[in-house]
Length: 116
Image (cartoon, rainbow, N blue to C red; front, side, top):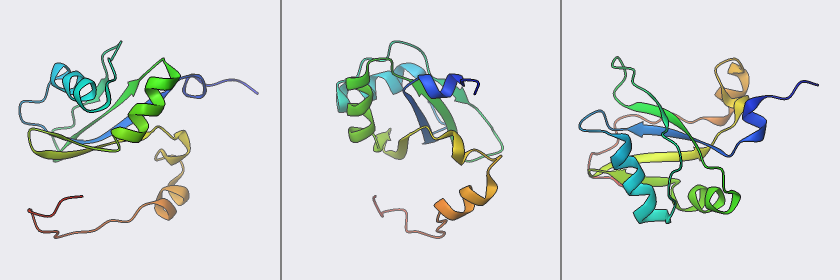
């Protein structure tokens, strides 16, 4: 079976990144201050201006730092806006819609002052 690049790397998928004043430098500062993780490479940010937030993928080569980031960065804030970082799962990509549907819950109209 052919190996995939996603099988060999410690990847985090970043959700709900704010569009306003967002930079990779700001993201690196948050990872360093909240999880003690120093980013070695720049994340790949998907800047889809039709969506309310950006998303991205981040590689952390050191396994211990990756585990630490998975634990401490599941929920984090950038400029007071809630963001998420979850371990990348290639099976949850759009090509597997049945699995996507069975693993997600969508909730609407939550109060703005509600936290995670």
